Structures are given as C-alpha cells and as structure tokens.
Image (cartoon, rainbow over the protein chains, first blue to last red):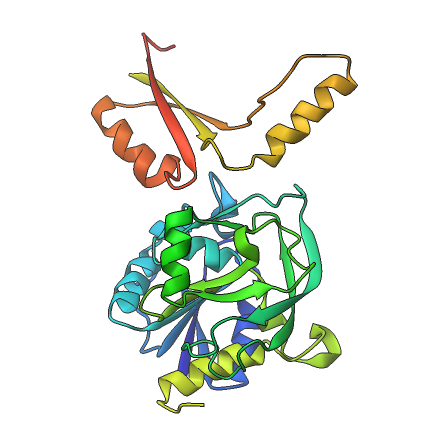
Length: 225
Length: 77
C-alpha cells in the first residue's frame, strides 16, 4: 500500500501526513508541478496554505498540474483524502460538494475537537464504529462547511455526511455540524480536523487519526473490517 | 479593456465579517447602519471582455457561495 502526499508551495502538514501514512504503509511526496502520481494507491492532499491561499483557500492549488492527475485518479475510483486546506482544494476542484467559508468566530482557531462517526461503512472510516467518538486537533480560519439545503439532503441520503462535530464542538459554525464529507461514490473524502496530527497520544491528544489511514489501507488491500 | 469584478457572499449565507463591521460602526457613533456585507474587488485589464464571465465562474468567484458582478470601465478606468 503506497500513499502519495501532495506538496504545494505553502503546504505545511505534508510531513506529518507522510509520517501518519508510513504508520500503515509506504508513502512519498508528490510535487505540485509534476503530473506523475508514481503508482500511488491513494492520495493525501495535506493541510497548509497552498499558494498562500490567495483569492480563496484552495482556489489556485486546484489548477496545479498534479491536480489534473488527481482528478483523473479520483474519477477512476482512486482514494483521495483531503485534510483542512486539502479539503478546501477538493471542494474547489468540485471533487467534493459544498465549500468552506470563514469561521463564524472570524478567528484562526486551534483546538482538540470531538467528532462523531456518522458513516462507518465508507472507505475512510470502516475502521471506526458507527457513532464512535474521535478526538482530533483542528486548526483553521476557513472551516465553516456550507452546502445548500437540497445538496445536503441528497448527501444525507447517500451517506456522504461522514463525520460531525460532537455536541458543543462546532466552533467554526459548519452547517449541520458537518466536519467531514465524501463524494457520492465514496472514494473522495475531506475533513477540516487533522487526523495526521493525531497518531500518537503523547503529542496528538489521541491516536484516533490513525483510524482514517488504517481504513484507507484496508480499503486498498481489499480487507473489510 | 479595464474591468472590475465585485464579489459578494450570496444572500442568505451568514457573513460574520459584515456582522462585525455592522456592530463596530455604532460603537464609533455611526447610527442607522444595517445589512453590511464584506466582499472582494478584483480589477484587471483584459483583451477579450467576453472571457470575464468564464474567469469568474472558474476562478475569481466560487459560484456556490458568492455572487459576482462584472463592470467594464471606460479607457484605463
């Protein structure tokens, strides 16, 4: 199992993403200006401030050469995980529905958040139990998930609402407390909190983030939890 | 051709920046201010103004959450 972790100018969490991926498989960085995914079985679009977040977070990264390959990879059913800025990039690329808006508190906020697993049958969470609570750090200014009511209803029916902030944890004002969503096919997943920072209880508050990477490995290797 | 693109949060989407400004103005003594919204302004010179719509749809705005308005300016505006 080999992960490819994208690296844009302004990415800052790609090294932690590599470290997390290497707990469950092989991983290497993929430079934004290249097009070769180097045989990766799954792609991680990491957090940070790609291209300075100019214009809108993710708006320019979405047109990077490597993203053309990632979009093709996703359309062929490949697993793509977007974390924080990566989630914003995937929304801008229309690989995921909706958009991320400025936090309701108008501030960059860094805190450990409690999440609830709403769909434990998907490719990114089948290592979790339904309703399981995960403790994972979040750190962002633009994390308020928004989609219109019609889109949200369709996403709910299709099981695309994968993670939500637990009661009292929705500090950014996301609609329906949504913290992580998938596409309709279930092979593209984005979330604002950072599972790659929660792989060791000593420094991550928990190792719950590993469950996301482990679920991806199980999916790629065809093992069903 | 000089062009100006005004980008605003779509109606109905909460705009915390606008709300913060609306609260700040009365604190300075400016009364009677409501419906404050904060957006972005992009000014650019374009050879083919017909492409502006597509530029807005693909990059300058996010049509899911923002409205945009293109203004063409005379001369070098």
